[in-house]
Amino acid sequence: MVYGLLTIKKTYFCHMYLKPLLKADLNEDDQNEDQELYEHHRVEVEKGQALLRIDKYLMIRIANATRSKLQQACELGCVLVNEKPVKSNYKVKPLDVISIVLPNPPANTEIVAENIPLNIIYEDDSLLIVNKPTNMVVHPGYNNTTGTLVNALAWHFKDLPFAQENNIRPGLVHRIDKNTTGLLVVAKSEHAMTHLAKQFYEHSIERSYNAIAWGEMPELEGTITGYIGRSNHDRKIFQLYNEEEKGKWSVTHYKVLESLTYVSLIELKLETGRTHQIRVHAKSIGHPLFGDTTYGGDRILKGTTFTKYKQFVDNCFEILPRQALHARSLGFTHPVTGERMFFESPLPDDFVKVLDKWKNYAHFKPMEEE
Image (cartoon, rainbow, N blue to C red; front, side, top):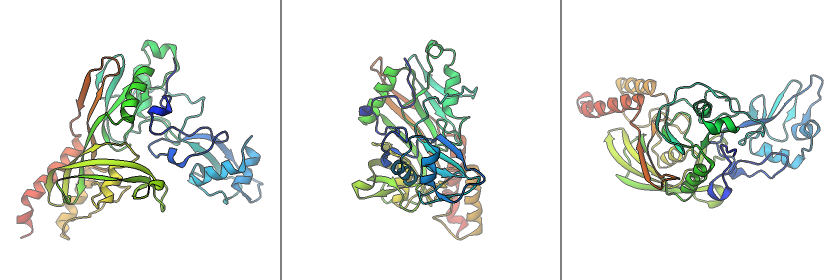
């Protein structure tokens, strides 16, 4: 019994990985950024090569490649030249290095087990719950082949009977961003993988996050909805649309836990699990997450012009050089026992330190500005 990162049935999974580039149609909606990219083809252009459109050039260099598929791949950002996406009309030059990358691993991709410490807060024969630290990618991808959570899990599983008998890949049912901390559930059997994925698909999984957002929220409680799709201006980021054809439906409920003058501590609960959902939703209502370099939260958005205030915020950025987002709790039905399980993770140290600084600032601010 071999199971992997993405081997459950399509009916139970909200986004399947792309099929091999040259054998199936590419679907832009499947190209989610939370899926790490794997290199399927790598071509180095010869020294004497004359200028030639890349789609025509790759038809010559890659067996069974069609021009239409290659043009689609370029449109979706799957064709890189010297590590940068290019359009199909790009003209290759001598010594260019061309890569074709996709979210699904090649059939022969091997996960290397690495002895990386893990904070496992629960484990049984069917699953485990891990508390992911910051700066850890969930699984290997293009330009990111080691040091991931999957590499660490492969080491953790290596002595178990099923790992000895099969070419096993840890069963990640969901993911969180590299610099988001908190809880993930990992399946240890195909049955558990399918059962848990079905719960995610049916939105019966309970997930809550804590975040620090810029500004005071317009309401103490609210719901943000819309269609999340790739930005028209920058394919690496996402944004919220009103039109269904531009993205996937998304729902986030938020509650203000504490207002701290120029930032707010909030709790967020997800109904859907789209790429960067919380970060996109927060930005869409004008309250990006504190420290979010991708969505504009890494600069002063609220506050005063006082030098001391700027120094204060810069110091907070140094302590927490990432988005202030933590996957706080996780609830689900056990795939074997049927028991309802619930787990919580305390806020990490960097988050707590910055939160405490904002609490102190909010308390003393009136005296500072008199």
